[in-house]
Every structure is written in C-alpha cells, then in structure tokens.
Image (cartoon, rainbow, N blue to C red; front, top):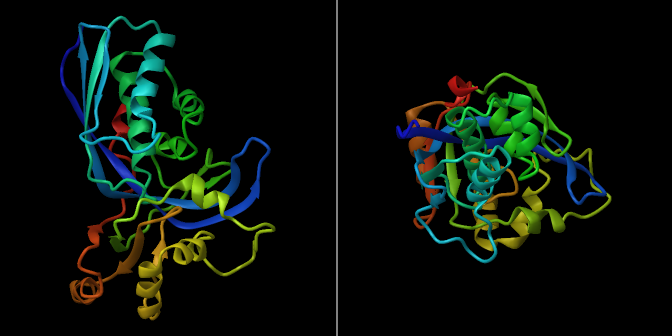
Amino acid sequence: MNTEITTILSPAKININLKVLSKRTDGYHNIKSRFQLIDLCDEITFQLTQDKDVIVNLGFELENNDRNIVYDIASKLRVINKIKSGVHIDISKNIPLGSGLGGGSSNAASTIIVLNYLWKLGMTKNQMIEFGKNYGADIPFFIYGKNAIAEGIGEKLTACKSLNDDMLLIYPNIHSSTGEMFSELSYPLALKNNISNDFMSIFLEKHDEVREFVNKNNQININLSGTGSSMFIKYHSEKELQKLLKIIPDKWRFFTVKPLQYSPLKELF
C-alpha cells in the first residue's frame, strides 16, 4: 500500500458577479455567476494508513452544527468503494471561514480528487462532479478546475477566460452564513438591477461597519464575493495598492491575490 504523504493546494474563488434567478422546489436556488480561481490556498496533506480510520485534523473547532464535510466525503468514498485502508487528512487553513471564498467547498472537492487518485477509484471528472454536488453547490466548480460561468445551482459550468487583474481581498472578520443570506432574499427578485451581486445590499444592511466602509469609499469599485463576507478591489499598480491599503480598518484582514488560469490540482484529473 502507498503510504506516501501527498500535499496539495486547495484554492479559493471569488464571484465576479452573482445573480439569483429563482428558488427551486428542492430548497436550492438557480443562479448565474462567474467564478474565478485565485492563488489564496489552503494546504491539505493526505496519508493513507494501515488502519481503517478516517481522521481529519482541521486545526480549529467547528462552530455550532457545522459538519466536517471532508470527513463525510472521505468516509463515504471509503465505504462505497470498499476501501480497506484508512486516511489521515491535515488541513492548514489560509482561506477564512464564512468569507464567500469557497474554502470549505474547495477542501471538499480536493478530497474527492485526491482520494480518487490515491485510492485508484477510477471516477471520471463528471462522476466526481455528480458525487460532489450532493455535498455543496460550489463543489462541482472546484472539481471542474477552470474558471467558469456557473448556472443551475452552480453545477452547470461553461469555461470562461481568466481575469488578468491583481486584486486586494478584504475580510472584515465576519462569518457570513450562506443559508442565512439566501433566506433573506426578497421575492420577486429584481433580475435586471445593475448590482453585480444580489447579496450586496442584504450584507450591507446586516453589518453597519461594512456599510459605513463601503459608503465612505464609494468612489472605489468594491465588490462582494459570494454571500460575503469578503470584498475585492481590482488594482493595477503598486502605488494604487498602497493607497487602497490605507482605507482598510485596522482590525480587518486583507490579502493581495492573483487570478489563476487553472486549479493547482489539474494534474490529478
């Protein structure tokens, strides 16, 4: 048995835009969004073991009733494929939780891709996507591995060109619940509004400090990723970046990120 340690990078994404088209009978929503991979990544280490245990070290405690989706996926793949070995998975988080950057979905997708490779399960990319979408609407995108226009619940993907812009990513230390944000949508939706993200106004209504920040800097094109809480600003020079860094409140986190053409995991599928 191969007990070699495999370490991979699990990338974040931003939503260049996000429109909610309708609510479905299954509780999901039909959306249209442009997904862009970025070079902010978690690091995940996988090691097959002689025992039958699936052990996942997240490096932090889960809050409330949050599920350990990586554990769920690894356990399910092991059982349905009658795998005799176990696996130890260590996740080093750089992507903030509840930030609208898809960190959890990316980790889940990475787990499917890597275990398909290590356990020699023989799943095609489409089979991995079909399996993954049962655990989260953003997971198919991360398995797809290319920048894309996403439709349906996020599983209908059409490849698109990558952005070329560097971006300043701003995280206001707020954990934004995707389910809660979707529950606060008002119907009928204003499908033809000019706002690039349908959740921007909802997010700003809920968070006074962020609303004041956006209003104070209304001359800057500040965009929300996903259902929040991260925001991003494109920039084109070091001088422009230095000006932008001065507007960020002291207690907030920020990252300078670059767009990716493909997922770092492309060699495994």
